Length: 402
Image: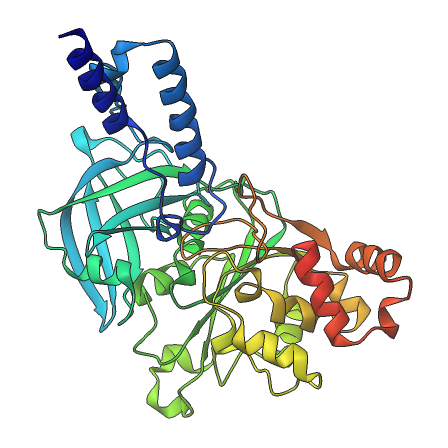
């Protein structure tokens, strides 16, 4: 009888042993805590409870203590109240919050969504586009891809369904009047993390930060949140521009867009023009993926061009983020580059900096002047930056997290 109880007890312990996450369960954004951090924490807790024969874990007492508010460690269920198709592959999804509560995110923070497709759990990061003080709801902008696992999950949603989120995450916190001017460079759904920051500026009468927002899209029809952007551009301190890679004729655009739209890809001459037209010293916020909107034809080094065009599409890959922009800026005139400071961003909806093959414990925004970067580069390579080829500069940018 006693042996049977021991066997049953052992089986119960084994059933409660935490399951190691699959690689697909990591969003790649350097979240803290990551799903692997949570796994190792729970495993250590399980081993300690088992060694001390703490039956409270077996009794499920700990599972009763799930928080009722948003938590970085625990997924919570949120009901879908509305789902609007903005383009053929992009949705704006609204989730209900209980009792007209607020989500509690600061501008620049993001959430992690969990989905299950074909018995495989996947996690992705998204930035809410609703105002930080929105009551009773929050909204996210989600683009779906034909071969994406999370996309399959999202496209199965209907109003009334439930989705699971945890957070908040993000190491970039905007403070009013922190910068003289923000230069926002956003491609596609990379517009999402810019929205709450921009809205927090225009909603605050005491925030006199200038904003120059450049949205890169394939076509005019593919521009997200047109009405919102038009409303924001009416503020005295906000300018909006667009770069359309698959359009060529201004006559096909509404009059209000013709003067502020460029065609082709975001190239060096446009960056020079933008930096030169900034009214104050700008701080740049850059969002992926830029390689599809970037003019790589001017690259003379084949290795760098290949890196710019073929870098992996995983959210945590630094090459997908700002490498073309940083490399181009390093080759701009010194008087131009010295006026610009950059913040690296990553993940479709998350902020952070994670180089290929290197996991970081928490998201962080790397802020460096290019002059400081050049100094470190010269010390490391034992030569001046002017003597280096673009391949060496590219390697340095990846190593430095720039």
